[in-house]
Amino acid sequence: MKLGKAIEQVQAAETALARQLNRAADRHAADPDIYHMSHTLAHRCDEHLRRLAPFAERYGAPAPSDDVDGSHAVAAAVRTALAKPLKNSPVSGAVLLKDLRRLYAAAQDAEITWVMLVQGARAARDTELAEAAQLIQEEAQHRWQWVRTRIKETSPQVYATQ
Image (cartoon, rainbow, N blue to C red; front, side, top):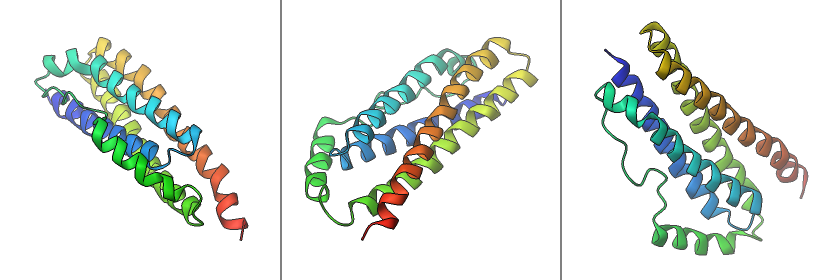
């Protein structure tokens, strides 16, 4: 079955999103909402992949790496230290918007791969995988909605202030 390939695509998308979320959190450590929510969402990516692991084994997909969310302590500390000068910089809002645009694209990519997995599991009549993936897909949809909301909140502040 080709569900193993779909599972690999989900793993890749979730891993990429988790890493971007952690980078954004560390880069914008001065913004508590971005910092905490991004780390929380990255942790959820890791949880999603743990819930997918039995199905990955069943369909011959490789197991995701142990450091799915990219939370290397040293790298995170360096990124956070580098974020401090950015905090009060006039370009900080523009940098945040750029990072949010990247997160939005990554979050949508991850969500649509879950949709594809759900549809594939239904076609293969694997109701257990379809149900698990459907629940996670609904959570994944909330991630990009959160990023979109942050873009809507940040854009006026960046573009309307001088």
